[in-house]
Length: 275
Image (cartoon, rainbow, N blue to C red; front, side, top):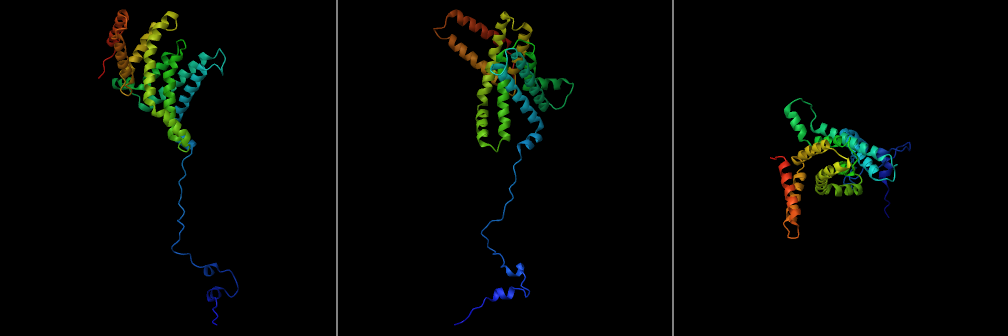
């Protein structure tokens, strides 16, 4: 019988019996099956994103304030009967702050020239800044807050869906709202058009005046000629087509058809030129 001795362990041990790990442990295999550890880049926190985008964060707060004050004005559950006018004013002020900040983003430099004021008037944020101040001194009307709140919801959801990437459930819900932006903008344009005859009728109950109607007419002309948002022009055209179709039906009384055609002629005469 041949006796095989473990020569490797005996030759690698030191005479003093110490733990010489460099010589006692075998070298690591070259073909290792475990991949090297990868350094995962940590995603930035929500606070860091908000601090990095300071202006957008302030815009988010002002839009959320518009939504909150509008709900407090409409819903009577969390307020007393003497507070609705206060929340109405706060909603308009927070919307004015949003429009002013957005206008500052769009036009960062202030100039005293004709071209600067022409570009200023063309901005949608300037239109809604004028809209917010226009109704501050008037009687509260719920319909006035609907366009401002709708825009606040739409832009807040758009910004929150960009920063809440770590919560896919909330992000998917916010994305569903922003995907319907065309329907929301059409709803806003329809609300702004209907508000004009309501202001005319409210003269008889002392809730508006001729100056307010004239200024709101100027606001509608600015929305009609907007280069960023064509939905006001589109809704005017669609309403005209619908009224003309109803007037052409045999069941429509002739006097109603004449009144509708006269109203269409008046609106076409007051409409500003585009192009």
